[in-house]
Amino acid sequence: MQGAKGAASMTRAIDGGAVFTALDVEASEYLPNRGVWLRGLLGKVRGNTFGLYHGRIEPGCAIAREVHPETAETVYVLKGEAVALVGEGEVPLGPGQGVHVKMGVPHGLRNVGAGDLEFLVLGHPDF
Image 1 (cartoon, rainbow, N blue to C red):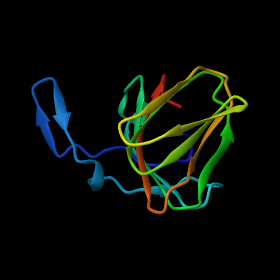
Image 2: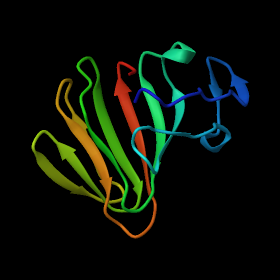
Image 3: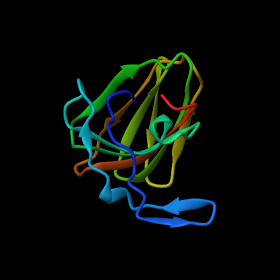
Image 4: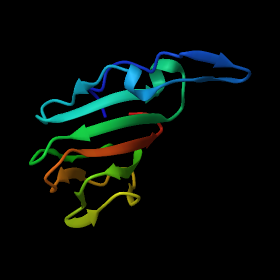
């Protein structure tokens, strides 16, 4: 998820961790993919070994196929209708569904619904 700037500002420290609010983190457009917005919640920039991102894809937009040679990626759909591109295949996804992509496998995500697609991305290790 290179290109997703910023890390979650910690709104409240707790014993052994912190509490944050995703919407407090500024979203960055995930270029060159127009209409794709990501918020970096956890990741290398904060010293985490994994990355957690909140994403939004506008109707008719997509994350083009990409490859992360050293990162596995899991996408979990919160709202909307998606098609996950995994290898040469396509997998339809709706709210409450997810897909896991192994390291080095080409993948992408397309919004096929009439409204925004909202999702979470977990990268291990962070991108």
